[in-house]
Image (tube, rainbow over all chains, first blue to last red; front, side, top):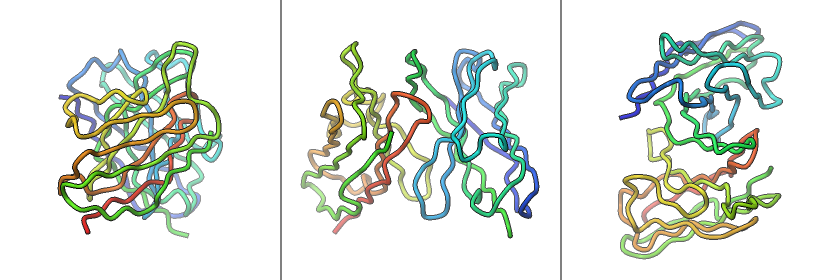
Length: 122
Length: 111
C-alpha cells in the first residue's frame, strides 16, 4: 500500500522558515512526480508545487513562487518543502501527494498523506 | 483554470440518490478523448481520497454507487444510493494543467 508520512510542521513566527518532509513507501518513488497541497483552516484545497521524477523540473503556484522550494531525495524516498518568509496566511495543513503524470502538463493526484500542521503567528 | 462546484451544502437521506455539479472555466477535454477531471472525498478528520479520475473512471476500490459524467466544462458526480459513510466534503479538481486547481467543495451530510 502507498504510504506518505509528513513531518516538520510547527508553530512559527511570521517571517520565519520551515522545512517539511515526506517519507514515501509502498511504491517506486522514482517513478512518480510528487506534489504538495495545503488546506487552510475551514477552507478548501490549494495545490502548491510539483516535482518531476528526476528532480530536474518543478512548478509552483504564484502565491508561493520565490518563497517555497520543492525537492526530493531518491536514496531516502523522501519529498521536501522548504518554506521561507512565512506569513499568517500560510497557516494550513500541508499534504504530501503522489502525482500521476499523463504527459503534456496533465497530472492527477492519486494518493495523499495524512498531513502536517503549520501555524504561522503574526 | 477556475473550478466552481454546486451546491455548497447537500443534505441527503440514506438510500436516496445524490448529485454534485462541477464547472471549469475552460474545457478539460483533450484530443485523446479524455476529460482531465478528478473527484475526491474528504471524510471528517481524514485526508482526501481519489474517487473518480479522467472524468468517469472509478479509482481502485471505489464502490460502484459512485459515478462521474460530463465533458468539456460541465461535470457531475452521482451517488446512486447514499450510505452513511459517504458523508464528508467532495472536491473536483482539474488535472489538465498546472497549477492544478480545485473546486470549493460540497459538504454532504445526512439529514
